[in-house]
Image 1 (cartoon, rainbow over the protein chains, first blue to last red):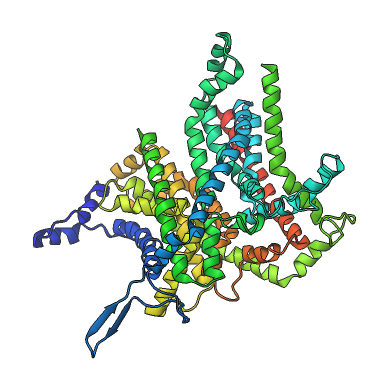
Image 2: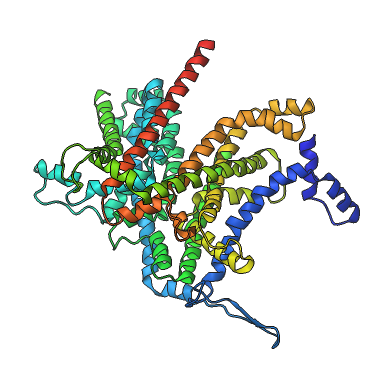
Length: 318
Length: 271
């Protein structure tokens, strides 16, 4: 089988004969299909992190590009000077601003993930229990906003939550409040923005878990005298658990590094790490500091998420 | 039982209202004559006229469409290759690394992807003189990199659902690897490739953060222009633009739904 013979090139040993065989057994077409995406990802995905790490160890300088180089050498004097600056990392730990930003990102992302779950559950449940023809319609109603611009969906809430926006006008008109509420530029607006933009990510996995659920279980529980609330927490929630976990990860992961939503809907005191990195880079033009923030973010936020996702994937495979 | 379904219907309906109310408000206000976005001044198409006369927005839209088209097309080729390698090449050294690199962009915060690519481009320019300056080309490279991950995941999951016996039969009958792929595998994964292309196109068209990092002066994409406009407050022209986008997407989704229904009916009548 031609598909199998080609794998010899990856486990060839060092001897000359093996090298000869190695060259002959390379299936060039197969090699190209493997190499093109791998090389692309190595150059444009993996190496960039090494560059970020290197620059996080340098100092800001008034130059183009605005950082010092780590290596200095003079061939005539025959010296090489390696200069590593850990100051950016020290500053990250000394100044509580950054720690606060990390913690506040995790807090905002967790609260909004939980709110998304609460809003999404009834929708997913309703879709899973409706007739197949209505299902398709309701599902596309949930997915449709996802295909429109993310930025414009966040923007829609700016007009909605403003001091003289539609929500305030309606509440004032109904006499529920006397004075317009300040909703825009608060953490509350950020929660709303995250719930709104990531709702489809929560509804879809919940739906696919609830769809598989056997509804006769609920009837059996009812016949045996369980109250709806009890059978919900003892039957529906455990059955939907894989969907709940998948949905929560799909919402939490992009929310924690979010920039657009806190920038447009949040106040100046809404601290999120994505925004801190953006400001460090675009406003302060401090490339080494922005790089250090990115490296720490990678280690404390992204790596754990990848490990959790990996273990999730393995459990599903079993 | 009755009371519970009433509760369910009410909460689900509130969810749908939550999803659509801001969009409907946006659409209605795009036809508002008044410049003050919240004061209703009667129906008017004025802002659509302003939108089409705004060269900055039109140029940015054309640039974004061009970038999205090229990025999606390259990402589909690269992503299909990667997805095929991961699901059909059996075990090979470095498979773990490749599959890690393929899934990592999906969980990577955009600010990190953007910053790291920019720093790479700057370092490469310093060392090799390429890419000289940043602009459309660097945005396309960045978009291909994160879109190909989505394509690879979609293609890989489609391939894992497929029955391998068809491909084995073609191999037994002496098909070369290339004709095996183009005549047997490709037609079977075509739906996954099409949805991968559409997703990449949308993601590229929508990206603000990564493009802001890797773009150069004079190369503002549509999201960058919109962001700088709405940062200062609500703008009636952006309302008009959003309405047009929602309209295009709605037509596309409805058309896709009818197509799926027709196919389902055809399949049903055959049985």
